[in-house]
Figure 1 (cartoon, rainbow, N blue to C red):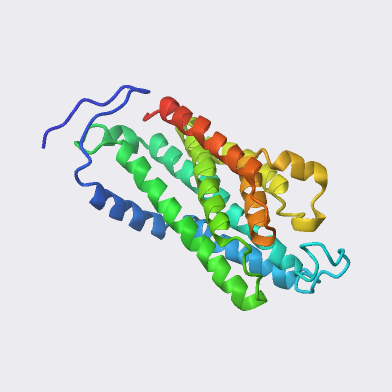
Figure 2: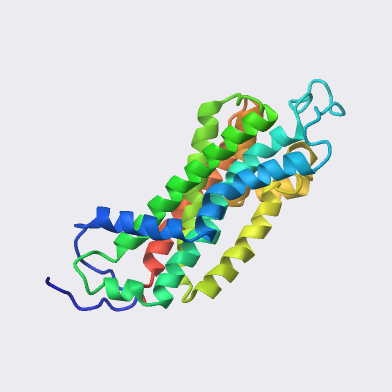
Length: 269
């Protein structure tokens, strides 16, 4: 087997994509053997949705104290919570799972060793992007299915816009996760940076104050964050007729800026 010299830090490694399918299957198997990654990537959104719906009093009672002309009147609070949970599903995979995995591989020298093989080191990054993207969709679908069975959730007013907002949210948040993965040298640093971004954005996205009870200041600030913009865009498309133009532009802008930056700054060792 022909080998190439290890790529210098910050340089763009060369190589072949031959064998990527096997690499993807191997990484998926390793990913599934780790309890934390499948739990947070697939099960966590459903656990949060069901936990909030059953544990907090009044979450399944129709909203009657809003004006009858309001989009919230007659909905259950747990129904208004769902778009935020879907946005959280994307944020969980992109910020708490993927950066730590890539940083662990960098810390243990996996990326550096891959640079001495014909397989492109970029392959392992692409593999984990695919794994986390697919499991995010699976986790969101599971939350939707079990949430519907448990609570009888409202049908989206604009299902296509909800789906498009979900995809844009994935683009923005995974770009942010890739930037974190690009620059942190160790798993502990990756976890610290990711958590310092993840939890404030959950607050601004309305995880603790969803839908009609979210303060205006938090809503105004949150719409300019990738997680908050995704939650607001899906909420608007789910319950209203308007198009979330500002939130969509915000998500596109985050992805357009952060993804090229992550690629430029990525270090393999």
